[in-house]
Image 1 (tube, rainbow, N blue to C red):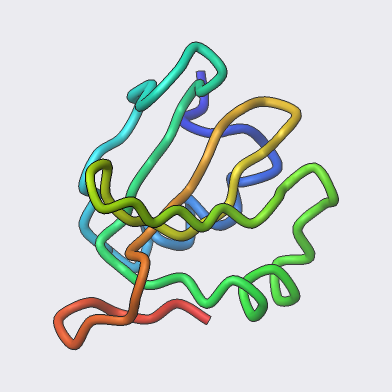
Image 2 (image 1 turned 30 degrees about the horizontal axis):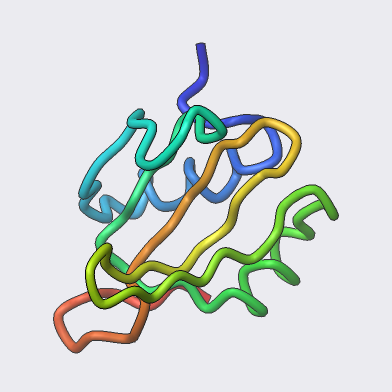
Length: 98
């Protein structure tokens, strides 16, 4: 079984090939409405990545910032409930993916 759905596979493959550290993979972080979520140690420039990879409409931007639960930014597939996410903000010690 693939780690993420076909809508996010190109991005997931690209980040894996670039050897970007995986913070977590294959967890259901909050609810049963989440399937395979992968968090990478990078900042995803959402508009640039979306345009370059031509992500379908079922893939939506995910931007989450909460004092208690943490921060993240990435993409969620509304059809399959998978996600590829990264850091909420750019950090000097993390790569930026455009």
